[in-house]
Each structure stands twice: as structure tokens, then as C-alpha cells.
Image 1 (cartoon, rainbow, N blue to C red):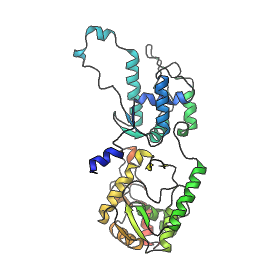
Image 2 (spheres, one colour):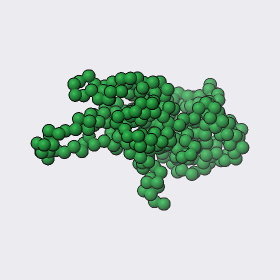
Image 3 (cartoon, rainbow, N blue to C red):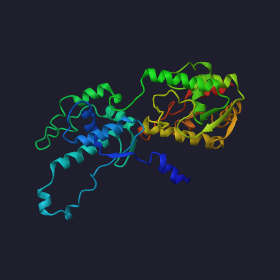
Image 4 (cartoon, one colour):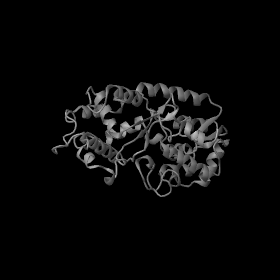
Length: 330
């Protein structure tokens, strides 16, 4: 399979469905029991079913930039502009602007619903207005959206609960306990150091397996470790953002920033995905080549260019990594 074929098969550049940004709001109200006038019953069922799957890749589309040039419109067309179409174009643009996205953006369903609730607190000013001729949706002020927002994304998207996470954690911990070979994302080697914090931290965490991986390597410093370049590894088994059916991360952009951190780490180490060394040898190389997480987790400059590209550990790097570099666990 060529690189382009692989991208088309499963990458974030592929899509499972297309929808207009304002339809996200309509789905929320529909799930809340409201019959949104902007959606047919069939379209509502389709969107609700798709959005329920957290790994669903959605392309947000709009006709906002496809309206005819003014010289191409006849006088008759100017006199028969459809107000509903105009209002929906505005809604599309309002939603995209508030989410910080552009037409054509591809997002996973869990992320886009969580981000929607964070950025849009009310439909007033998005689906309805006080301007004559722009009144908008008659149900936008009844509180349905706000009530759904209080429930959170789990009202729309399938998200593991605390019991599911605990079960996942037990299974992931058992896998590591019995393993004779570890598979770890390149940048996760650094996360383990930040968590250990030179011996000051490193207690059990509920949403990942950093603790278990570190203890496994302490007990067996010569255990072979293979570096993984995708966004998931043995550290991710209990995370509620790990979608088991698709084997994908469904947090922000699939945590695409972690893919870059993996690539940057591999480049700094002079290694390739699949390279395998003993755990102790990896850490010797890591501490020699990467003195600070700023080079990897802050992308070298500490600048956040968008929500999908947030930095970890602060713009100048995580001090826990540097403390572990001075006082390593193996």
C-alpha cells in the first residue's frame, strides 16, 4: 500500500460524513427533544446516529463562499433571495468562527461536540436575533440547547464512564504486567519522565499507564522497547479518549499534536518507527539528545498556534523531565 493509499484509507483527511456547521446545533436540540425546523426527521436520525460514534470523521461544509457573483444575478433573483438560506449561511459562519475552524475542516465527532459546548454557551445570537426579519428559530430561546450543554457531550456522543475506564485500566495494566516486550509512542518516553518528576511524583493515574510502564522498566531495565509512531500505544489503554472499535484517539484532532511529537522525538534520536532498544539504552539516548521537553512538547518555540496544537508542560518545558534527567529511574 502506498503512502497516499494509506492516508485515504484511515487518516484524518478522509471523511465518514459531511454536514453543515449549523446542523450541529440542530442535532443538539433534536436530541434534547425539540423538533428543529432546520432538519428533516430522516436527516436528524442520520446525524444523530453518525455523531454517536466518537471516531466519526466529519467534514464541515457550507455554501457561504458559493453564492453567485452580483453581476451573475438577474433582477428577479435579487428580488427573491431566500431569507432562510441567508440565515443558515450566517449560522454556518458563526459556528465556524466560534470553533476556530474553516469550511472543509475535518473533525471527529466527540471533539467537535465537546468544543461546541465549550465555545457556544447559548443559541441567542447564533440561531435567533432581535432584528426584524432576522428572528430566526422560534425555539432557540427555550433553553433546550443550554440544558443539553449542562449534560455534556455524552448526551450526544458515546463516551466511556468511570466504570468503563476502570475496567480498561485493569486490562491494560495486566497486559503490561505480563508483557516481555513494550510498545511505546516515542514522546511517551518523555511523559513517563515528567510524571516521575525525578522521584517526586509518579503515583498511579486513572487515565493512562505511565505508572505501570515505568515500574515494568524499573523491574526489567533490559526489556525491549519498540518505538511507535501513531497516536496510541500501551500507555493509552484506559483513556476514555481511546475508541476501542476504531483503535483511534478521539480527543482534540485525534491528538494530532502527539503524532508530531512522536516524529520530532524520533528525529532528535536519529531513529525510525519500529526501532527497538533495551529500555535503559533508550533513556540514555533520550537524555543525551533531548535536554528539555521544550524541544518536543512545546514545539521548540512554546507558541500555541491553534487549539489542536496546544503545548504540554509550559512554553519553556516541563521541569519534571529535567529533574528525572538528573535523577533517572533506570
